[in-house]
Image 1 (cartoon, rainbow over the protein chains, first blue to last red):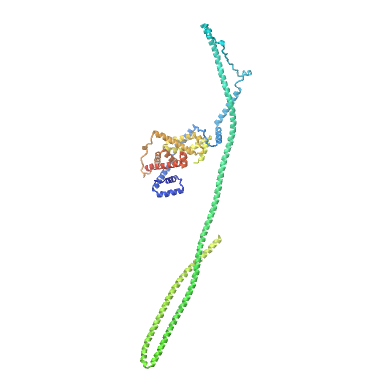
Image 2 (cartoon, chains in turn cyan, purple):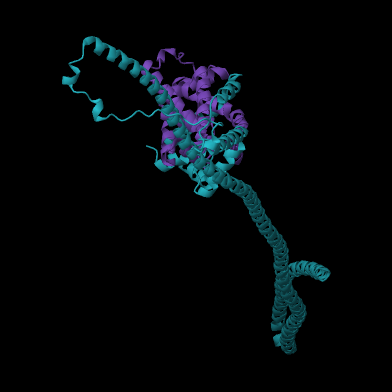
Length: 441
Length: 178
């Protein structure tokens, strides 16, 4: 089951609303979950397929048909302007009312009718003064007399009349009634006319009121018109103010951005300086390293100089030593040979003494043979001595060889030191150059 | 879409310059038609819905809150009209699965129109609620916030509905070889 947060991240990624961090998190999560990976792939594929569907063009006459049908309908204006500002709403309603030409004509018509009604109401109904008769005639009203007690005939009196009389009376009455009816009809028509006039009068009064109200309304309308003009100006001013505010905001933003830009420039210059300082620092570090190496080289140089001096001394000492040794060996050899010679001389005196002794001749002979043996021994001795000398010389030579080898090592070291010296010299030249560069900077 | 322009056109229209509504019709006729087409899947009904949408918008323009986005309001009308039509259709006829063409082999390269047709058929198999979020997101290119405002539901609901719709759609499209 894929986690809900991953699902949300997938959606965001597909809809292009994921941040870089969210995308990175999603990628990490997808690496760990195969199920999530397949789900994401499928969802993305679906989105791609949906995006691939091109919008279709509507039928050619759709717009035309819509516009035609709109001409037959009117939109509702009653609940429009759902704004909180009632003044704005009412003024805009007035603006709307006067914006239409038809409405202006209608208003004109109403005013004209009202004026006509006022005129009629002033002239009509005619006054009862006789002087005014002839203009519009006074109403000749029929007023029937009230029924009196004498008109009422009791049945006993009437019963004495014959049928013919009754019928005659009746006929007369009918005729009278007819006349009365005619008069009554006339009166009723007059009455109705009067009533109509009264209605008209009341209507006229009403109309007067209405007209006065309308006139007041007209005044109000005029004031409202002037107010609307003012309002429109105010609105225009408001719009101007809004625009000004927008411009101010833009300007402040621009100024902010300019200050930011200048700060950024400063930062950039600082960064450049920092970079330059870094380079200088790196160079100085390098120089320090070089200096250290130079110092080390100087130490080495001094050491090599000391070594060289020591070497020279050693060489001198070795030479002296070798000479001393050689002298000593020679002296010892001389001493040995001297002692040998002394012994031999002693032997020879002895031999001479022995020779002088006749008796001692045999002995001398014997001594001669012994002497020859001694001589042989002496030669042997001398040979051994020579061998000893050679051995000592060989030893000396080996010592010398060792010393030579040591000297060679010292020489190698001195060569290395010389190379180091060369480097230090190079470093010094570099230092000089850097110093020159610094001075130039 | 410059919404300020829409508001201005609506304001002018309310101020008596009715011709400005024509500008709005010219601007939104195609998107509304396409919205309706994706919702109902029928060219004639889509044209009818587009016409009704504009008429209703015109009639009720006085009720439109200028603080809102006009296109959201218009899309909402169109969606409601589409849903009404679908409801009426549902009462008379059920969507016939047999009308849908057989499953194409995945390796067969489909023509663009064929593919669009399959996608449309699959969209039509979604519930109207799921369909509306898919249409608004992928065909009207609305953000979660705009969709929320148009459909009158929360953004969280929009997201969950969109996710389930996409999953459902994916299964259907996979079945159809896409």
